[in-house]
Image (cartoon, rainbow, N blue to C red):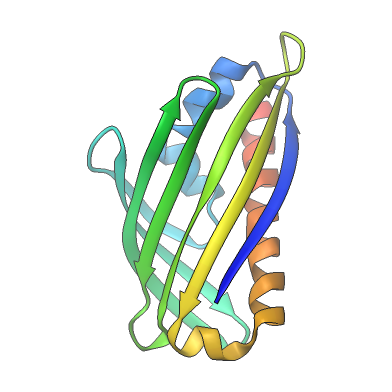
Length: 149
């Protein structure tokens, strides 16, 4: 089951600081809902463990995160895939674009996509879509607070 979410967030920080934060595993770990660990394997690869609750199902996903299409400090694509045992799998990504909004602010635009399978997919598209929107919103608002703080 595939879905897509678009949005944007104004961050009270210069574009260079926002870009650095988007590439900092510690910052990303603090912003990803349910993230237990995020370790840098290379400049473009990370290993992640995330605990998510979707409806009645709570699962731990272990997976890989890859950064692609890097265009510093303006854009990149972040893609991830995780396996949650009997709960199923989740994979997805986000195209992230940064636009300067004066010297001290940045507009972060994003388009996310997600695909889930297994028991999670049986929960129905409405629950998965609303949960995905909530998680994306939490990530980007937490990121904005942390970086623009």
